Length: 155
Ligand SMILES: Cc1cc2nc3c(=O)[nH]c(=O)nc-3n(C[C@H](O)[C@H](O)[C@H](O)COP(=O)(O)O)c2cc1C
Image 1 (cartoon, helix red, strand yellow):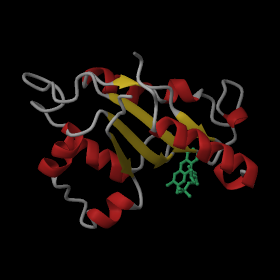
Image 2 (cartoon, rainbow, N blue to C red; image 1 turned 90 degrees about the vertical axis):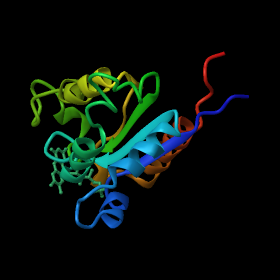
Image 3 (cartoon, protein in one colour; image 1 turned 180 degrees about the vertical axis):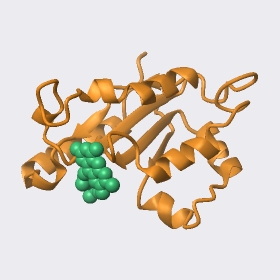
């Protein structure tokens, strides 16, 4: 059976401990990206987007000539999996809800990023209302996460 080589970028705390000064080793990160087929970005939802540190990683690592632009095809055909958790419950992410917009609307910039970089974006895995999640909900989420870390590629 073919398996994906999976890279999980954990923002935070792993990125924070690797790069306490926020200066990424872009060459090393790019090398890791090139060695894997499935790129998982794991992050808490901050201000309707990725946390600043993950945005920093994107700014410094997804560079012109590597991830986009002339010759920038290093990520083409790889798969991108977003895994995030929100404070707001699912019902708050609706036109009439507290957060006004749906998650798929708010995820559009990341979808555009994936498109620009030639990444195939999988359905995001989202844990809503993280602080109020029950142990059973957390266990179900963890199981879904485990499943997507070892997907079976199409024949
Ligand atoms: C700076 C900051 C911004 C946040 N912005 C949002 C937000 O826009 N929408 C939301 O639903 N929750 C927001 N939250 C709540 C976090 O998403 C939630 O606490 C997190 O998913 C819990 O995961 P963690 O324990 O790994 O941080 C924010 C939290 C912080 C600290």
